Length: 387
Image (cartoon, rainbow, N blue to C red; front, side, top):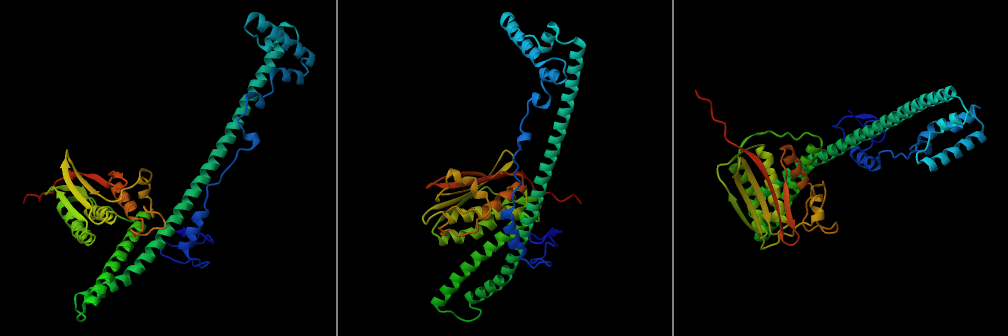
């Protein structure tokens, strides 16, 4: 069970509104996450790093406090200690000087030193115990904050998933009827009507892909996107991705070329890797101007199968390369929406490849283009057992 960010009542992951206070859980989670901060603590003056004399009085002060020597005798002994240091080059301990001057007996000195050692040991023990207590308290605060943050993120992911699913259902109906209209099953269309339907179909398809990104993101955020590893024929994975991307590249006047070694097999989740390829290709087409080029290359080498998507697009600055994998990050300036998208695609790509324990390598130069590449372990199809 999760807790409502507003009233702290228990709520289930399926609920959109808190049954106790009625607040919208997704919105409340977003607001609470912004306010959530790990408590900051500044050490109090008494908690500052200490010297030994701060825990235990100096020997001379202790002897004066107990009445074993007078302040005048202490000053005389300190002066004599300095004189000896100047003459001999090696200073004597204060206790030894006091004994030599006859100001204190060896027995009294040994007793006071032993008491000081015991006092120092106890002071250090208490200081360590206090420090350990504060470390435990701080650790507990951090753990509580992380658990709360995890709850809020799950509530947000659930909110995104619910909204996305509710949008997908009516959108599916719209796409279905648009297809019927476009194919002429509901009557003939004049050229203007056919063109309008085509524009609507493209927009509906784009919206559907955005919703699918949101659903996939919410599943990954909640740890519910299952990776099913199995021997996978690369040809079929590539074919599905190319089939989707070719018309988009053609519509944008971008040359799309493939160089795919045939008959390769990888050990991976074929559906998820197909989605990764499709998104990398879609991004390449999206950020490549008309007249540009996009390449998909697949080859095997030394037990691994390599995938590379390269384009002659706008490129990515070095300071933005790490940011492009952050959820909702948009490459262009916030005021420009020329390229559209949710900013989730590359975040999902990275999470899927991370689940495969695979690194995504990125090369890019502003104004020249980008290249995204990764590799998977090569395998072979499982043969049917002999009868």
